[in-house]
Length: 216
Image: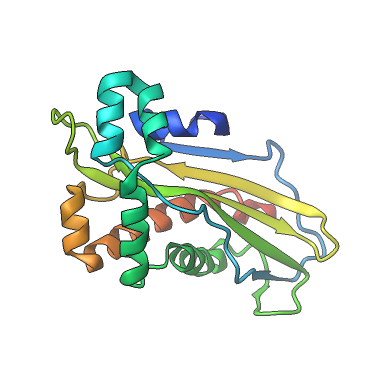
């Protein structure tokens, strides 16, 4: 996968234009986890107030004003509120999906002897910085096929607050891991929507944890 370091300030423009595939940022020098025998994953996962959805409102803004127009339209797009309600109504919990995939892949890194529910030597905090539906390449100026997008930060800390490891991964709608669908298809098939978000979560988490296994 191609990894590009980008400023968080550029995310709205990147989302609107779909100009990167994945992004990963981590410490240049991996740190060893001496003395850390067990870890846990915090139950609470931070998530933005609403998803970013490249619907007709944002597409029209991009058509008229380019990337800046799309970013401006995104801030007031009704599609974001509609998609958030759709996820809630159908019990599609992106936070829990990300946490489940993180825990499922954490053991495979073999970085720590044990993953426990409480009383660990260190704990992972997960933050979803961005999620939603982004545009794929299409000749259609407005109703473009969309894929789920996701940006996650994982941080490992000791109980006294010392950060041992931190990494960020971002996947855009230009990834090849999921199928592209018009937004009506997502609304018509909640199971499809959940499956697509689980797929991108799995990809993001695997990339997120890629450099963890060599640290123990």
